[in-house]
Length: 92
Image 1: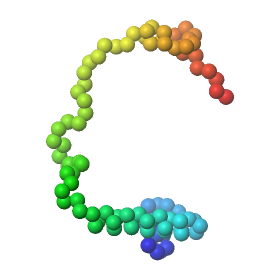
Image 2: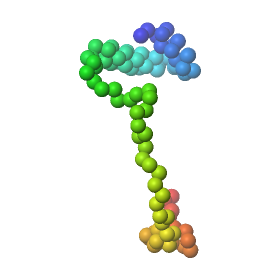
Image 3: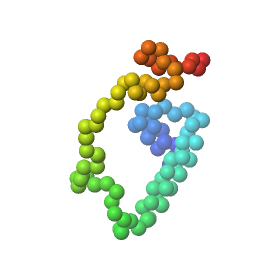
Image 4: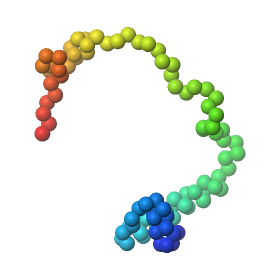
């Protein structure tokens, strides 16, 4: 990838490149393109797809109503409280 292609791609992505960034980005883009070229040569005929356009089954868990936690029981786990608030140490 030459510098002109890099500037064109950056302009389309609405990026502004500084001259000192061009060479570093050019090398990174060439490395990515090399990976893509390598992947094109891999045999993937016997690999099962990991995703599909049409979901064959619901992949999320069922919504199940669960009993609510008791506020007092939850607050009893706090190391320090002030009324119904948990005291958090100042870190600054």
